[in-house]
Image (cartoon, rainbow, N blue to C red; front, top):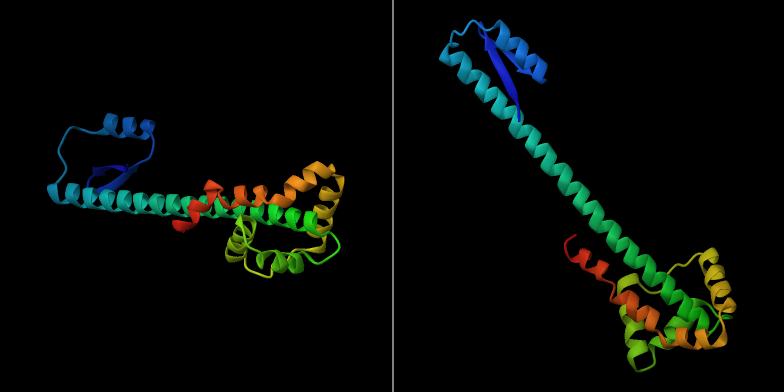
Length: 170
């Protein structure tokens, strides 16, 4: 909200409670000229409208940024899970080569891998550090956990991450 006073034709901004009290103490009780009051009202209305529009734009910008970060987090999860699966299948070949080979198969895992290719783009540009980290992660797993990883449930879960829904609004 915007508050102001009118004194001898001047528009006086009221920004604090103390300022309001000072103006009221100094006021002699005489009503201001209607034209001055109307000008003050229009100016205050314009300031309030501009302030509200700016706040709305800031809220929209923050909302869009929040949605973008949600999608980014879902994308990161999918990249990580996919790379771990690919390294679990074959640690010695390029992840994109393994990915290409697995997408040629039939079944749920191949479907998930094709969907991941649509969301991330194929081939994907993992860094050497990301690949090394994923290989180390897989290497440190017990064999039974590596077998589970190869099934693709982590990729399926990453594809079903509810944060992907934010992409529809962006």
